[in-house]
Length: 504
Image (cartoon, rainbow, N blue to C red; front, side, top):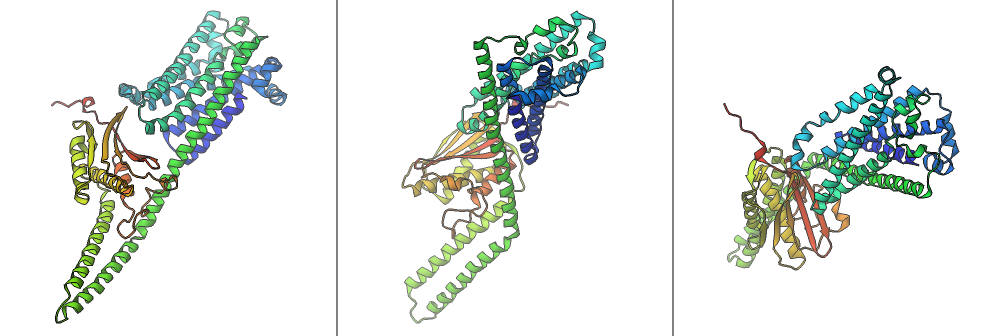
């Protein structure tokens, strides 16, 4: 059963790597690959030794066909031991590397920058366990054999325990639900695999190399090679193995689905905007239509003015129509201009207080009477292009106030600052009706809008997302029907204390 579970995990990681070619996806794929290799080596060794009894064979092999196939494989003890060594000594550093990469603890910064320092010990151990090297170093030397078995077991368990503690500490340290939802599937997947590996990691390649030579090797922590297992121990082992495997598989699928969804959304939005760029003529055509409509209004104005006694009410109506059309054109052209201009970004340290003031001022130009509640550390700084990021936040504030009005409420829109591990998060929360689930996947698309299309071209949230991504950040959204919506602008935390000034 464990081999089938880890094989499914490895297959899922290959799919993820094919669709999202990132460094983390490569590490996950290599980690599950090493686990598959390790399990193949262990099961082959157990099968060639004669099995472990019907009860445990059912757990390990799920029947006689797999056990007989592994027993009949034509491999030397040296090759079998090398298979186990490769899987055993690659999994712990890969797991710990992933744990370090995913740790947002500010104190882990130096470690993340020196993650390669985790690898010399595993690589050196693997070299020692290459059959010719191992026989030259340890054959006929029981003391060396015991040292290698004990030493490798200590660092293997140390790596696995350190990785599990880092992952769990990170999970309990995250306070914001929107961040926790992104992290928990990954954490649960990696911790469950650490548990599954730890159950069987006492299997040392030396116990295979010295199959016929060192009797003491048989009882060095290999509970699954004992002649008889007590029913309580068997039940415990079976339960832990099954739970760890199923939890790992389930969360791997959740993690894969999350990453694939993000990747597909990114590709979809990029294609849509490319199509939008190609369709710039639609903008020109729409503006042309409104200008032609203005021409009609001007002709009517001329006709009224040509009358001996012009009607003031008609004149006032035509003037209001022109004013409304002109404002609409300005808004639409402004959105297009901002979306094009967003490609030029200059990042400098900006206090959150100044950023919030700019965003609120911009928002009040459109909604002078809109109440806004600002709750953040005004002295906290982020690396930002002040004008662009303030415009993006202003857009979110305006949307929030319009949603609040649409819900028949007058609650203030809230701009809230959070510090979440290595991120600074700016939350814009409204008291609107919320966003329907069917719309949540489309709200960031260019030209998509649920509002009146005469006044809203649907570029606002796409513009916000583009600006935030140019700040090396991301945008998340949570919404509850009837209660309101929160948009989270997640930016890398800026800590000037870590930068050392160079002195001449």
